[in-house]
Length: 155
Image (cartoon, rainbow, N blue to C red; front, side, top):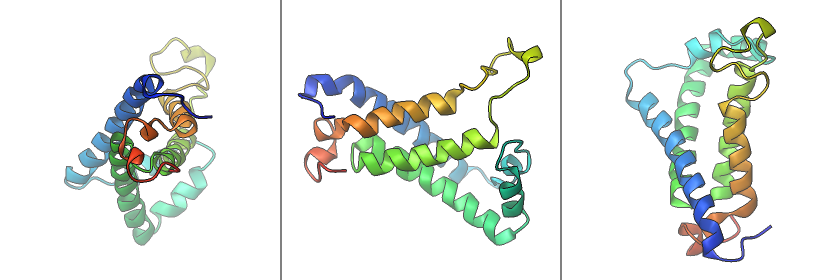
């Protein structure tokens, strides 16, 4: 699917930019926070990839790769989404991160806690942002409002 004109791209531009800011902010925050590590996040995981995450934190090398990988992907995804540059690649990178975050702590809360804030049974912010990135990937607003307009319309 393609957008017909730049007027149709404005809401998607705003959505893409806002999501980009979320990713960029998270990446920069982790980058400048002394001692930040994904180890604590991974060690508390209770999702279907719990064993895989435990394997990662049992290796100092893999934990380090995970730390730098998360920071790099968050910053890369956020910056490229905000600029509208290679937005399809950035959208996929963001969706991969969000799937990993979703599977780390799946929102399959028990029914006794269903009214608690943040417990929405299956739907959480990671899934919603994933779906929004899928829309950005599909419609590519950067071809009208972004650097892709000048550099490369395919990405």
